[in-house]
Image (cartoon, rainbow, N blue to C red):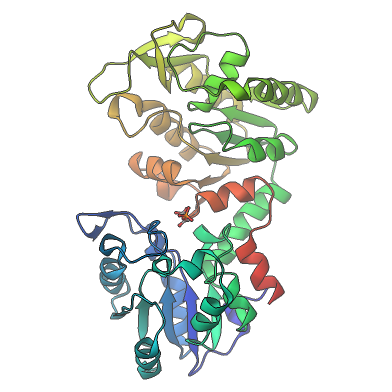
Length: 393
Ligand code: 3PG
C-alpha cells in the first residue's frame, strides 16, 4: 500500500481524512489524543510544500446539521496543538462553491478543516456524488483516519476512486502494530478481552483462540462465561442467548491448549450507582441480589501470573465499571500490571485507552490505538475497508 512518502506533494493540495471524533465537554475538546497523533503527518505534508485540507466526522448527527456536532472547537484546538492556524471552512453542505473558492485560495503550508462530514447523508452512504465532490477539493488523498477504517464511507472509501491515494503515518503505524502482533507475534502471546458484551467480541474471541497462548476474559462479558459454568451471577449483566457459545469457546480453548482465564473473585454491589459500596466475593459465593461490577484481587493475581512471561499482549475492554471509582480498581491495577511487563503491549478500544491514561501508564505501553471498532476488527483478523480501498486505488 502506498504511503505519503510515495508522492510528491509540492504545491499540491492534500485531502486528508483524519478521525477528529474526539470527546467534547462544554464546547471544548476533552481528550485530544486523536489530534495529537496525526500531527506528524500534517507537519510532513507541510514540510513537503503541500496545502492541507483536513476532513473528519464528529459523533453521529445522522445526516443533518446539528450545532453541537460542529467541528469548530476541534479546529481551534488543532490550531493550538499544531501551533499553526487551522482555518475552519464551514459549510453545512461540506463542499459547495464557497468552500471550493476558499480551498483554492490556500497557500503552500496552510491548513484547513472542513465541517463535520456526517452533516451530509452521502457520507455514511458512501454516495458516489458526494465522494466526487470531496475529491474535487484535492490532488492527492491521504487516509490517516484509523478510527474510521472499519467503515465504508464516502470520505475514506468512495474518495479513493477519484484521487491518487495513500495512507498517513498514523494509519501505517496502527496497521504495523496490529499486523505484527496478530500475524507474527513474539510468543507467549496473551489477549485480554473485557467490556460488557460477548456478542461484541465473538469474532475477536474466535480469531484469537487460534493464535494466543493465554486468553483472559474480564468485564461483564465474563459473567456470561461464569453463568455457562453453572455459577450464580445474580443481577449482573449477562447474555443468556450466548451461554452455549461461551461453553463452545471454553471447549475450543482446551482443544487449542489456550490457557483461558476467568475471574476467580469479583466486586459486587446491590446495584450500579455512584454511591454504593462494593463487596469482594469469590465467584462461587455470588448471590441472587448481587451485581458483579469489577474483578477482585485474586483474579488480578491469576492474570498477572498467566501473562508474566508474555512477549506480546493485546488489551481491549475494561475489567469493570471503571467510570465509577469504587469499581475502577481492577481495570487500573491491570493497566499497571501491563506497564511492568517486558512485552509488546497493544491497547485498543476507547474505554481501555481512557483506563490506561487514568492509571498514568500510557507512556509505558508500546502502542495505544486510536481505534475502537477498527482495532476490534483487526483482532477479528478482518480487513479494514478504509485500508483496502487505498490498496486498490
Ligand atoms: C470511533 O470513535 O470509533 C470512530 O470515530 C468511529 O465512529 P462511529 O462508530 O460513529 O462510526
